[in-house]
Amino acid sequence: METDPTIPINKSRFSLKWKVFVVTCSLLGGIFVLDRLLFFELFFMFPNETEWDSSPWYNFIHKTKELQSSKDKHRSIITGSSVALYSVLPDELNHKKDSKTKYSFFSHVAMAPTDLYYYKENLLNAHPNLVVYIHNFADLQWEYQKPNFGKFQFNEDKWVKEFGERYPAKTIYPRAYLEDHWTELPRKTISKLATKSLFYVSRFRVFFWDPIEVYIDNHFRSGRKYHLYQGEIPKEGIWSKGWTKETATIVCTEKKSKESIFFQKPNTKLRFRFFTNLNSFSNQKLIQESERTFLHSGWNDLDWSSLGQNSMDWSVVQIQVLSELASAKEVNLIRYGKDESVGIRLSHFFCKNTTLENRSYSRGSYWDDTRLVTMTVPDFKADYFERMIRDAGTRNELWRLHFVREAKKNVNSITFEPWLEFNRILTISDYFYQHKIPFVLVLSPENPIEFDFYKKSQWRKDWVSHLKSHLEARGQTFIDHTEAVSDVRYFFDPHHLTYEGAYYYNSIFSASLETIISKSNP
Image (cartoon, rainbow, N blue to C red):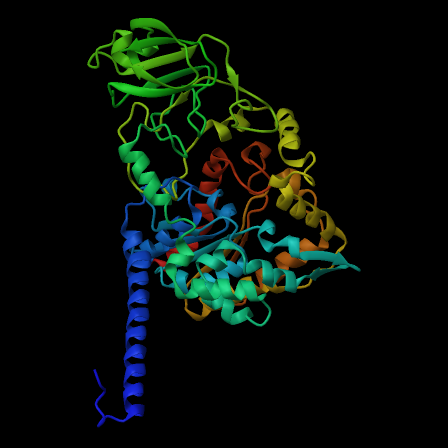
């Protein structure tokens, strides 16, 4: 076919280029719209059945969107790192009848002051009536501070490069971080952050399958794979991974025809004792007692009818291991410190209806924590040394705690001077002051064993003084709760409270905010 000689060649070429340009822009625009629709909007409408601390980045973004799309009569938002998550129990605080506020978390693991600095607009959009920042010495990124001639030298070059590779920067604020530091970042990091700034699928792929896998596990599988045990809690307690003690007495609110139990050793012999209810258990009025040996290790089916039990005539079962017990270290519940015997492992929702409510920021009580409170103080200190201090400089899981501990020792001979991470807190304070949102900074409880390293240092006095004077000059509140919890057994490590410790601290925390909440909630 011949071309039309009446159409100039240049015009024909321009027309074709224009069409290609329009089609390309349309395709790119469609991709951007589809990316936002699928991965930023529709993806977070999927039911969130993930458990406490199981998918931190997904849960944080999901919680942020939930807060931004809802309002409470009075909302107090607790923000901070895992120190905040392990310090208070909002579920318990919100159950109080006379509560004048609704407590919610805006928090994730390893949240540095810089992270909160980049989140401050998102936090403001979460409709807070009060912002409480639970802060700790450990949050100040001590791996970038080096003592030098009586002062700390902050390695900003290393900080900039490594922060660009952290999940918060890559997943939540890539564009903002890139705009602030693109001249200082390596080319590879720039490329990565630029891609994540453009496409949510690139940001969220690290956790995309988390809620989907949990949903499938909860609805279509046997309950043999899970993060935290959510079945009925035995009277004797249970480990977070579902391991019982030698004996487990369980009120079975949902008697399924079959359950699943796990054995570490083959030829495990169990004794089952059935009772009508708790009263009959207290009076030891048995319906039936039977014993059974399970030949195979690993997961096994437990068929109640095979034990001669009708589903209608009992509600309490006591399961006792009669054969050799495994240990907590043997089943990988703990690695260091005092070992304990364990019994059997129960399936995810053992003797209970499948509970599907959002538990992403709900912390439960497990034997992992409770056992520490049952120790004597000398036994706890010996166990703590084995778990947290011995060979800390060479154990990968303790490398950051080791940095923080050494920093506490170093500040005794160091002069306080503000640096980037410290100044971020002041900027956050100014931001909420400008927006007329009451802001409270709380120094969280610290394990007395570790606090002693720097308790009397001049550096700490000046650090606290700078924070306090800055906040009080703006009509904000500074609360030092570093020594609010004196029993070392309430701490799992230097800065994180056990469940029992958080339950104890809850009343101290809420009481310290009562006046502030009353003023902001007339």
